Length: 162
Image (cartoon, rainbow, N blue to C red; front, side):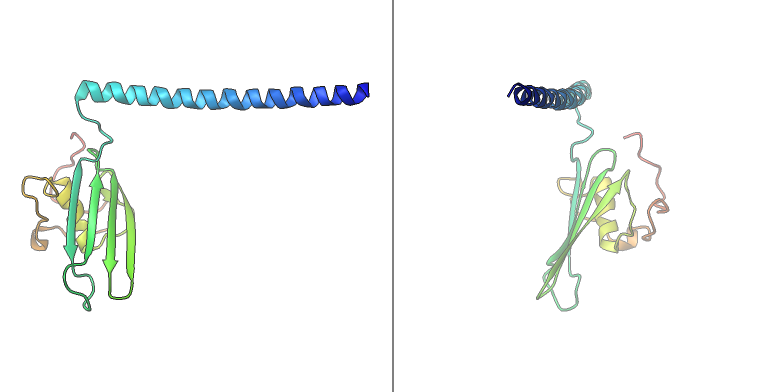
């Protein structure tokens, strides 16, 4: 009986020790997240602009399939001030719809962009998207050709200083 109580006490102690270790780990994780949020808040308050907030938005409606008309397909660019974000493309047909998301890092995509995706990316970066000064996507003849990420020659300087 005494041995059983000693074993139960020892297991309870080990369980409490494991719970305390997990609690300490979780508290340190939350402390790190709180520090990150606090630093971000201070940065935003100093500059007045949150660098991670979605700033550049553009949408382009188009006919992706010959069988469909009415511009039911679209590409949507959502980017922050550093050019990081996502392009969401939805190709809509009569019987099916396909949706793609492509990650954008510093204004470039790792995968190839379609002509429409490139146009909407460029419109968002230039401020010609939703709420922009011209609020329309540039025409294709005014656009540089679509090339793999990191090799697009837009003829403009890098906007890393933005």
